[in-house]
Length: 416
Image 1 (cartoon, rainbow, N blue to C red):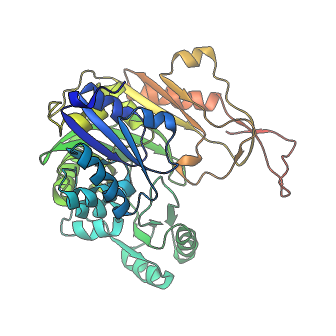
Image 2 (image 1 turned 60 degrees about the horizontal axis):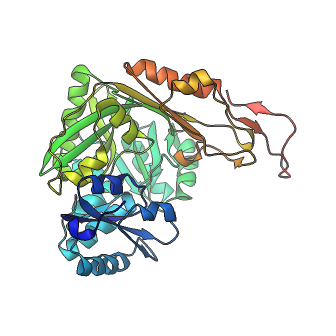
């Protein structure tokens, strides 16, 4: 339960939709914490875990958020301001700068992380960080630059997230198809060189310009680039050192001096190349994997380090492995949800199956289209990743296809 505010030694304001992990961490460190959220975006149960919760009509409007934070600061000075996702991160950075409140990154850095093409141009002077790219809203322009970049190439929203509308184009025809699909979700279409190699994400925390690499996460993906699983630790030895070195140089070059970062990297034959980065923790349960594998609680770092309550760098308290795998299914009506055997359930740290019978499931186009996940922990990364994927495969969703007239077909099919 929140303590009396007079007993608190620091006041943190959080902008955006978030769960209670940050609130719990703040209270462990004796900090007051306030949530600034958009009307209807979080549940009442979530807001009660904070000392105060303030709703604003539109979280993307700086004036709305600034007014809310100003009022908060008049009642109890705000010592630190956090944005918890891409949209909120920009607004929080702008408001923090306007009100003179410390925050992890400047507005310029927040915008570079959000605008993928702007980030590419900013990094272009460093050969190890350069990826050929161009952003446009015109197909003719995309065709012209595609020839310069060279096929195959990646086509995706310039401000996208969650692997939404990411395509690989092999020629002019597939470029046109991909451009049309991306244009439906974003006014700015990014085309960039295709990076060949395994993909990882690097979870880091920075303080006063020093970067601690907390973990390298290995990921698996479906053909449309939506992630199917993650495992920590994901890389070791010289390759891990190369990836860590590039990410540190990237964070330095971009100007990320504080807070969490989640940087996606492909290990190409030419060495590690940056895909994109975010000034927030990784999604898809990576925060849980990090704690299971290393003992490091990222929420504790996020609120504890800038308020002087937590030592930096953080010391790992364990050396283990953890993996997450995701359920998907073909489009249709869910006829039956997975029934996890007792033997498999005992091996799982966490199982979440929020999709219910009768739910109509569409095509897998975004990470939010996945139907659940399982987390497994143990000693060996390859073993836990295989176990998590095997549990998903052994316990599929049963799907009834939906006919053209909207009725459920009589033949059930299982995801293979």
